[in-house]
Length: 278
Image (cartoon, rainbow, N blue to C red; front, side):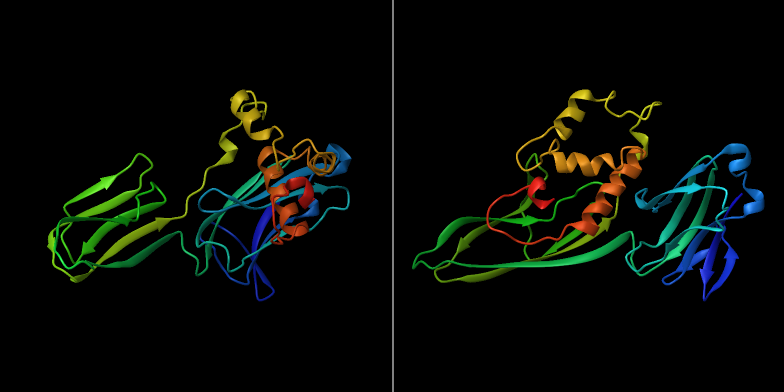
């Protein structure tokens, strides 16, 4: 049996969908030896442990082998300030399966409200008036479902809203006349909502766990070698081979963790690429 606990101030209590974990707490996945069928009748037990965020992303991933030693403390997830507030899913796959929801509370939210102020100064430097002066001012785009502009207030009334096929937007202002040396300031205030979203990669695999068979042309386009992304370089292949037995999502997470732990960003002149970084 696999149990999930909340550890706070060195004290443990069973976790449930009502549990609220805060910064500094730990979520413990534990196994009691007497309740786990160990090597005597099942051989080595393999587990894949995932912590899934409220938006479906993998926060942490780990492969665990249980043998005849009967591990009591299998894995611990610390609650850190960079985690979003919301309901997380602790999922154990493999020879033993377990799924539990845990509420985590931090200062980092999934939805934010913003107010953007923007202004532009313009003038007529000539000694004669400018007639039918047109000014286009860019405003924030709507990017569903990430960003939504709910309201735009201007100190001048725009004539129309124009946009292009990429979603860029402008407010057009028409001024009947600008007198010689006349100066004007146009300002607007945009109310914006942004949301944190993600795609669930666990859904793009078939029954055999093979994503290549679904979209072979797309798969090739994004995995073949190209300048600065040398996917067939011997050192890159050597590193990737270490994680060849991981499931697709766990493999992607392992690659990200490898980069975070082993590669440092240093600005350089010119273009170098992945093989150089390794």
